[in-house]
Image 1: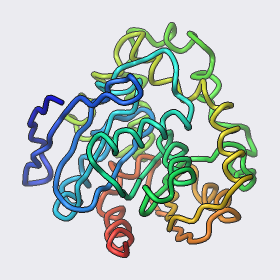
Image 2: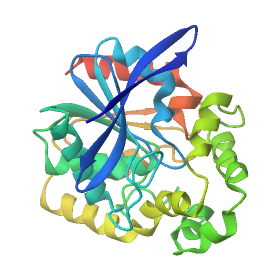
Image 3: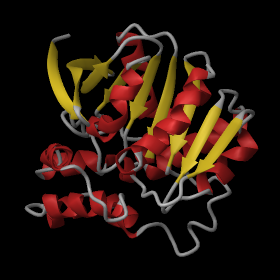
Image 4: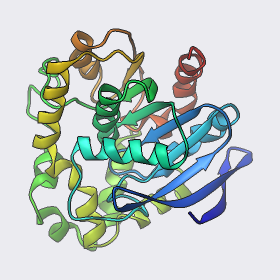
Length: 292
């Protein structure tokens, strides 16, 4: 397991990050780690990489061992043809923790990273110490009717058609990814170096195909979530955080199934919470993690 040391700017300071390739389920993941202490696993969504967590990793690494992979198909991880359903991504996360010698972790998931985080907590409650879910939906569980009243966001259908989005977007990746980064921060934008590193990993047909994988596995993920809640309850202490546009939909979906649920809504915050309002996010994460 080769380790590369990198330094990323965090405000006026720099954070030393270890980058390594970890093979899980026959797929090599690119994984950033920093700090020591109880493990915190961070699972990003679209269009993100591990650098989504740049602004909160330094603070967390002062007390925790932060583990931030690029999901399969994303960033600098491998891009297999299959395995983008939430259950397989949850298995990737479980195997990653095992490979790193972690026996218990708080798991944080946002957007496409939330369903695998949820499924991991449902399937392996002894492994997941605490759970944080942000700005996502859990399949078709009741509770998201208001959010979906006008239909799902337009890009769900676009991304979900095999081969279509890749063909249309080739040569326009920077503009397309940039649109999501700008809208996900309510127009405030993302720091140029972070933006450039994220965009770099979305260039080319194979990169786009991998990134659209979770959208094309939506039906499978939905069935896995429905099966999970039909057979058991979420016993892991859980916190949901909503912003714009998902808001309280995730909380409403989860409340009937969770035994210990803390919920928050962030005002004046875009979908990409860790890049848009990192300090406000840390204000919620610090006490929740400490309570473990």
